[in-house]
Image (cartoon, rainbow, N blue to C red):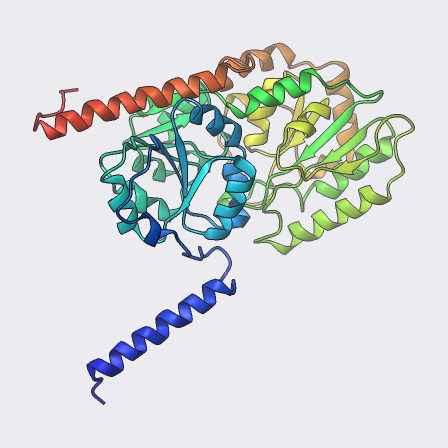
Amino acid sequence: MTTTPRRATLRRRIRSLGGKVVRRFNLLPAGTPDGLGEDAALLGSSWPYEVLVYFADTPEALYQIEQWYDTFRALDAQHPVVVVTRDSRTARVIRRDSGLAVRTVAHYTTLDDVLSRSATKLALYVNHNPENFTCLRFGTLVHASLMHGDSDKLVSVSNQTKAYDFSFVAGEVAVERMARFSTLYDAPARCVPVGRPQLDGQLLLRAGTERGPIPTVLYAPTWEGGQPSAEYGSLASHGPQIVRSLVESGRYRVLYRPHPLTGVRVGSYGDADAAIREYLDRAPAPTTGAPHGTDTHRDVGPAFAAADLLVCDVSGVAMDWLATGEPLVITRPTGDAVIASSPLLDLAPSLPASAAADVAALVDRELDEDPGRSARLALRERYLGDTAPGASTRRFIDACERLMEIRDREVARVSEGRLPPQA
């Protein structure tokens, strides 16, 4: 049957109305932005923001940008920052919690229109969401990947990094990692070491926190990963035994901090998480000091401040903990996760699943003797650079300013029709 123009128009209107109903009543599949943008109000306007943070995700991924709020606020004080989202629910939370300017843009044509008359120079990204390409298309911006943590996971050297003009990394080890594992990528030229600005406030909090009467061991596993090769998590294979061993020793207070995405892909991780929480709720408190507990605070800072030793997986938590100077134990995954040699993994005590029940003895040794302390402190500078409070935030802002200068120079060169300088 031939479709008449009137019938085709009616069908389009029905589909459009159906889409609006689905978005308005939050009936979208998980991970799908609602697309309820401010496009109508933004079209034909300009904005004063020099820096654009592009975050296309839905609320379950907010942990990836939340850790950057303090840093973005510090940058905003000198160079106006706007967070651009594709989801109105995400926008509401970021606006409430960060205090930053937030705009929700559903259509890239709107962003094209606004940027064409605005002074925006730099775009920052905290993940590799495929939707980032909506913003990466703009050649009048310099684009920099920040990501949401530095780690020895091989996913930290994703080939997706090549999409950005520059990649902000923590320290020289990250540059070496990129040079070693990323093909056809000039890591020394395109990686910008800035440390971990998130640690500036955490270290100040730790310095002002009194140590408890007995040591606190923080167990902070990562999630199960998006694919088997990235399944570094120990929660299902090690977790309950680690927690039980430490509690039953009677020598430690245990603080458990699960990853925000725990259990989203593998049910056994969710089961282990529930079992540990329930166990810690019922476990008798240590004879002195604070009780055992589960930490779900948005910021890892309070957990770091309370802890004397960290048990974790191959993850960004291990990198950040280096700043404290205190000992750590890193688990070994049981599945198909790819583990490459790295300075920290070669140094830190390794905990296979078969030894999880004996973790208390390993913790005893590390806290009493700490045989790797001097080497670990040397690694701290290689991984993180200067960890003096405030130093990393300053480096971050300086790096953003340099990239904006590069942008101005390149835009002027293109407008004048000059060829780029020869390498």
